[in-house]
Length: 200
Length: 310
Image (cartoon, rainbow over all chains, first blue to last red; front, side, top):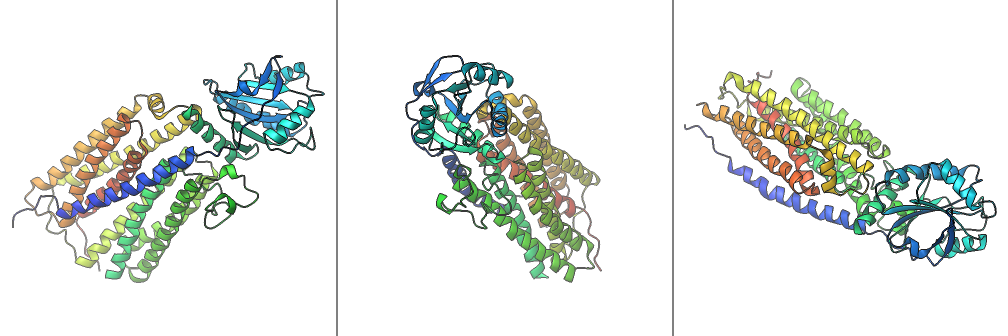
């Protein structure tokens, strides 16, 4: 009997199986990609007027063309705000090479948070450039912005301020609320920033 | 006998399919599709829409596609786990006297239970690259054990068909060397993937081209080793077919499968560098690696003379 060396024909069945698997996998991957980039649009940030720690005016127009991670805080806050700022700091460092992502912390205690107080607070956390803005406005304006702009509870300020980071896209539309104390939420926040930055 | 062989084949093929599905979870970025474990958003079946989310869950965490892809891996894992457990029980009942069947069967059953738990740890570690690689490594070990067991179940079923083969002395050594190099190459590949994850974390806005550049020249070392593995594989094929002996059907299948797999793998790997990490190629690159190691084990076992089983 001659030695058989040729490729067994049955192995060709592997081809349609591989192709079928590839086809299904391609569909699943496309589904995942599409769904990852479909980040809900939760509405437009209304017009507002704030004053930044540098003394410059800050309006909605300044949010255009960049992604913003927004939070509400006050400098004399005993517990939660320092944690929120400390959790956000690594993100501030992470995006240091990009001009696409900025941070905005709005004071809910403008009576105490003068511009020098905001400056001192930023300095304390090593925030030296204007990729992270700290801003204030009269309390009624802040309340209005929180309620009408960001759909947040503003009844019990400053202590009862919300503990979310809010992602605002380059057209000043709100794209998500991320609880600061959930590690998974920060992961999703980074993913959403990545997706939105890709479209810019 | 036939029933056990059939069950073994199902368990083995199921495990390789599971590795494919696991790779799919990875390349589609669905690893945290369910942030909790073992349930998914507090449910045994993931929510289909936001309205089904438990009230304490932030809707921003929920992505229906990613949740279902991750859940598919868990479901398939449970099904394959049950298949493997059934195989192990049947092996213990029927083949207590055949070590090369019951030992790998029981080991793979223990490992697959551990793998389920470790999969939960992968999720809870927020996809730590080392945890993810360990998850793949355990899967490859399970698949290899099952492959080995199934091959022996096949031999018991058909008698010992390898007697006709008389292979050159260096062949088995070459196969062992090839296996070791291929295994190290798989670890290397997993570490490259891990480096990419780390780079992605430190360069959050980099696209795939930039990430690939940041990875540096080490990817070409991986490619070169891949070429060496391909050459060694062709050499093994040559060593078998140049002799006058009649290779068994299994040997013939194994060698041709290895040649096809390693050739495809070279194309997939080159493609990953050339087109910058398309997910589908990444998936097949990982899967082919697992299939290659398993097939190499079949070849090694086949060219090893099989002792009579009492």
